[in-house]
Amino acid sequence: METLSLANHFLIAMPGMTDPLLTKSVIYICEHGEQGAMGMILNKPSGIVLAQLLEQIDLPRHGDEINDVPVFFGGPVQPDRGFVLHQPIGNWQSTLTVTDDTALTTSKDILKAVSEGNGPDKLLVSLGYSGWEKGQLEAEIAANQWLTVAAAEWVMFDTPSEARFDSAIKLLGFDPALLCAEAGHA
Image 1 (tube, one colour):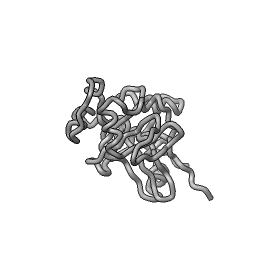
Image 2: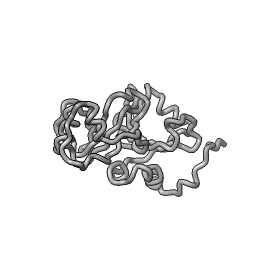
Image 3: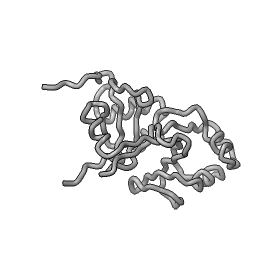
Image 4: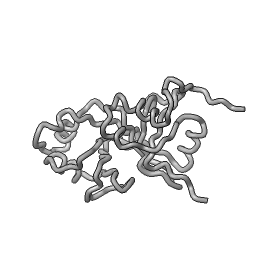
């Protein structure tokens, strides 16, 4: 039996989510298989901007267009490491292809290109990622901690971060105010 992959889907935290790092989170799943899952939180700015991150890793920046681009808290795993979700895929040293158009890159060459004004057309930079061991994500979904929906690139790249939670829920076709923290069992 083939395992259902949630790659290229959003996880939307249910109101009963007790982990304060994940409350009201929208996570884009980049990889999901027999070994587990990994993704990045799309709606929790870290408090620093891309220009500051580039300065911290000694990359000069050319132009002011990245001054206000937020760097996100992608999750609690490897919070000192950068992850770049981007379109188009391009040709970078360490890239995980998620779809025909979307990839996640962890190598410094993509940030160097961004600092020089030659980066991908669309990008979202995070520090850290969210990860689950084998079976862990499936158990959390079964425990009513997450909703899942096919990802929409406009939510990731074109929606302000503070509106991504409601926008992702609306992909399911209902009002987010109708969510409750408790699951019903017959």
